[in-house]
Image (cartoon, rainbow over all chains, first blue to last red; front, top):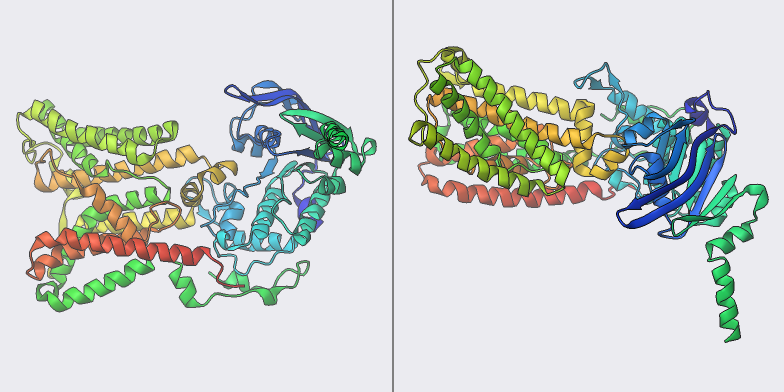
Length: 272
Length: 355
């Protein structure tokens, strides 16, 4: 399973090297402040877990890194250079690949066309260069097999696959094209136990291959299985930012469940 | 298409090859957009061969092809635009705008027709660009934006023509410089045996072939399907959605210009009120040919078959000796049937049929 990763991972990467550094980053949509004062560093060879409830700002955070929405406060450095991404293409060119919660596949298109969408293999340059269709089908099939997915027919529209299979296609695609940073937005949210396991193993393999991984989730159990660094967001601000050695699964779970507010609430309820 | 799926899996991969299913030919066929249109075309062809004896000659067949080509050429662009998830209601009047621009500009200034033809092309591409840019910039549905362009062009066609020539048609241009070469390109014909072949038929086939190539074999084609199927997903993986859609609007206006040139050099004069209503014929050809109104599905051959069905019915009703006024009623029925077949095919191809 790791061969794709080591094949496609950037060999310039050194473990622990900072790939994305955010300092005091914030984002406001008009009068609504979605994110405020975020300090986050993605290191090569580490999994940074971002946890938070719905509306905590997790999606906004990855949209800044993946180029869908530029940040409007603070500084984001990519490979040491200050950067504001204007489009997903720019982010991809820096080796940052994102797998979105809403899967980001075009359901009427074939599996292999989805796999290569935006990064098609062509013979020659220019707009009229022909697609290398047979090769793309072969690669897409092989990569999916490496994730343990055998699609019935690589020509079938991706909308005919199950949610878990679509998720895996999206992840396989991101790993195949993202050589440096892999951002996973709630990759296990829609999956069953077995498929979650596949995704988590893949995440760990990406870390071992030296990639910087950003793992967004609201499941502390999944995060604790693979994470090196944990950040919990609440209402657009970081309320916890600890290394694996400094935090226990209980603390993560308690913070996710409401933390101090929950303690207060339990006192109130018990005393009433 | 299926040979790659039959090759043995690489040794490292899980050996679940037994899981692999090659779909039956009927399933594969039904998932293709043009199948419904092809069946309809064959049925209608046989029907008219029976009821319209005048249709049973090669000469009338080529007349039908000519009628199909005048709709089919613009429909190539409209079909691609609809696969890309957008709509163009100004495609009918832009044909007339192109012809009027060329004729009046050159006649009033007394210059070579080539100059006017090229400037007219630039003007049409600019209209296509404005359509696309406004749609992408404002996020207003293309139906409304191009409805606006449609009315602006329709009014301007009549107003400007009246202002310049004092009537609603342009003066005859067949004595002007450049006429012969332009006529040769846009509106000549040649004979093969007993039949006359209009050059637009050849152009039509070339455009269809080119469009089919772009859609199936290039990355731009991949992007067109993607922006029509799910623009957000396409953007997220790095497809330049805005450029693709604006390019599609410009393709439609280019092909509209092309037919405008054909109309001008065939009749030597243009009526300023022409072209209204044709935008619906292009859309009908695309939809009958299996293109989804919501985008992301369809192909060039289907659109060509749709245009052929249009050409065949419009002429064969005359060949059969019926009242031609029934033609539009027939067209409406075809459209309804096509939409229902499309819906059925879409449901069929997006639900799991194996496993």
